[in-house]
Image (cartoon, rainbow, N blue to C red; front, side, top):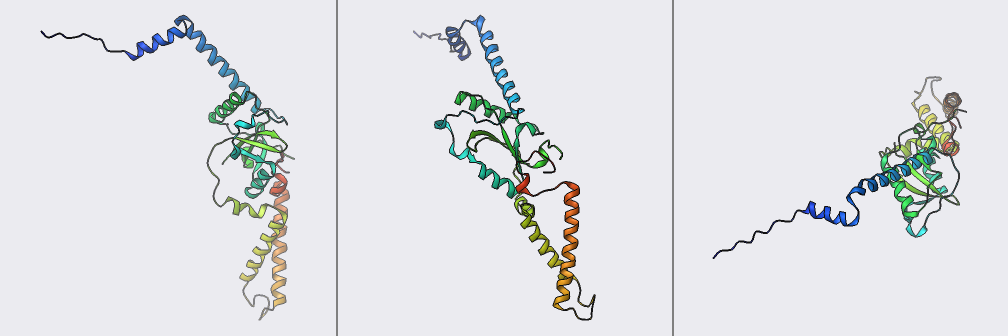
Length: 242
């Protein structure tokens, strides 16, 4: 005699529901979820508020949970900013939108370290800040004693030639070197016999000096008119014409 056992298959969704109902009453599940989401929204609102505040304070972080690859001294930040002509300013001055991934990262750190992060700083090109008049942001949280913790990086990487392009604007000495090299090469382009049948060394250097003064005059006029300054002076200045 053939006997068939009629065993019903297991519905995973029903089993999951039974497991949940053992933990919490079904009538209260929506209240629990609503409260969790409310607290999460409050935390995100507080993060957004703290990003817009200008505070000089150290954050209380658990050093055992920190990633050493994300800890940087102010001197490291200074060297990066002057090499690539970047600004290191309060996040409150940042005019572009801070991505949600950064907010999530801040929220994760706050929960992990049981603290509220404040005093955020950002490294970015000048054009990304709302500067007062007189493409790869990095978000930092201060740790104290001129140390900063890298919270999040977003956007595109800088152009590979940016450091070379910005080298002349790093210091006054670099800019003078550029003017001297440019003036010398320009003087070499002046054809022989333009001012005399045969150009002497003395005449060449007179032409070179004249060209140098011309380039220097234009540079000074442009610099004053546009409020430009060297990277060593503007890297942490909130003023457009610092």
